[in-house]
Amino acid sequence: MVGRSRVLGLERAFAPGAVACLVLGAGACLGHDGHPEAFSDAIEAGGSPLAGFGSAGAVGHVGPSAGGAVGASGSTGGAVGATGQSGIAGGCVAPPVVGKAVFAEQIFDNARVARRELFSWTTDEQAAALREDQVLFSQSERRGTGAGYPFEVFQQIAQDETLPERAQLASLLGGELFANARYGWSEPWTTRMGWPGEDYGRNLLRIVLKPEAWVVVAREGDLTVFDLQNQPVSLDQALANPTRLGAIFYEQDEFAGGPPCSANFSVGSNGYREFIVGNLAMVEEWSLGTQQIRDRLSANIDQLSSFFERVRVCPVTSSAQQWNLRVVCQWDSGSAELTELSAYEQALAIPSDDYLAVPERIAALIETLQGDLFELDPLVVTPGSP
Image (cartoon, rainbow, N blue to C red; front, side, top):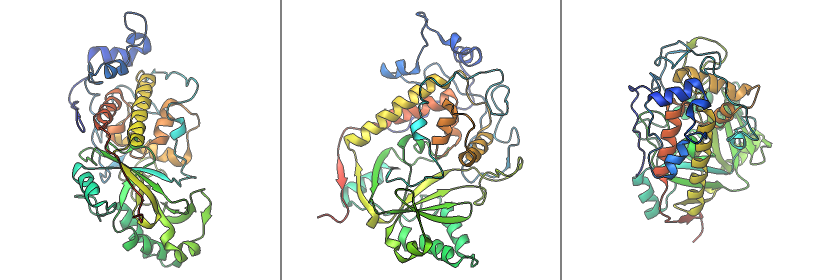
């Protein structure tokens, strides 16, 4: 299988056996030998990890710019089963974390955002161009969507003259320095599916920033700067040394029109977070088609397969928009207790419908990443080298 394969429609119901697993718990999923019937068994056998599953009820597709009443039940489709406060099926008790949660080490701390290694998906066409001309940053906007929300926010901040240094930095970010850019995250799996209706491509780039690079954080209408040790850099320093600005961390939060965490019912779009990389002077290396990238994809597939096995007895039952609101608001407040689900949610970059923690969505993600595994054809580029 090549590229993305989404074989599940949203209209179908769960297969009877799957319903039994989800409603009755792990005991209903035991095979003849008394052991759980693992999706990963079908994967390893070369079959589809989606075999035997239909789609969870009507969980609607909501893109990053979709407005509407956040939290209004039914606004993006009904939920599967009774929904409690946490969006878990009524009466369902998730198994306790045994040892370490699958995504415990990938939890993204919003208080320490600087990352040196980032991954970005790209299309076949762009991958071919990268191999031919080795120009990493060539596009000034996402195809069909314009420059994107972050640059609208930078323009808004640049017009606020109450803090001149912040306004100057916002103007800088919205100018030539990041005019051509790529979007990414610290783990490949978290951005592959994107938003329903979008496809970022099936070719994975690895980008490594130079040790001296700085990261701008755009959150809650403010701009701050940190080095790669997550130590603060003053705006004066950043403005005096703009070539050291290697990446931007952006969060679509309440200020930017994202989920309204300060109110239960309001109008807002979905939230997400991302890195924007565009300053080639701060890129130490970028690569495509290497063993290192393939190994990272394989590790993500294994992690998601383990996560599927641990959470399928207690899937999320919220609508996609209700779930997005809860996840994004918890990024800043944190979860009171670390669970398999909370670790997964804290690792996410794009909590879209396609990442909703229900079996068929996780299975579709696994299958998509399997289709992205490639034959090695390494290209490693060190900008500025002969």
